[in-house]
Length: 111
Image (cartoon, rainbow, N blue to C red; front, side):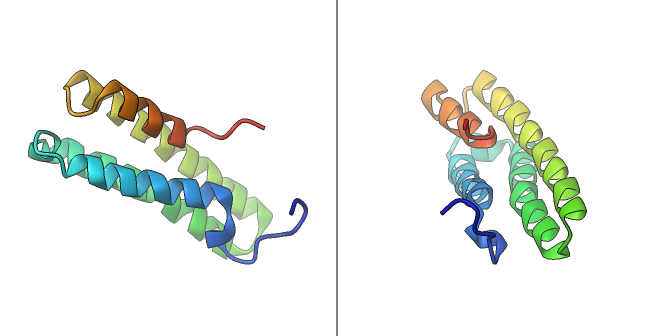
């Protein structure tokens, strides 16, 4: 289906990945150990929500230039989530396998 323009931000693969990441972050931060670190919980949740929100806002702006600008902001938030996931790994809040899965969701897919 290459070449067909998306009619809504929800159709964008990158937005679907961002939604998956945000839901995974919320599930992870509900864990008994992680949930006690309210500062990190708040920060990683906000950053993950920011990814999807910026994709949506940029898409809805209606111009390619603004959409690209918002994608760069979303990319920055993705880096923030990756950094916070590293802290969570270091603190023992997340296992290495789950860290890798979420880290991969933050990265642009190959191809």
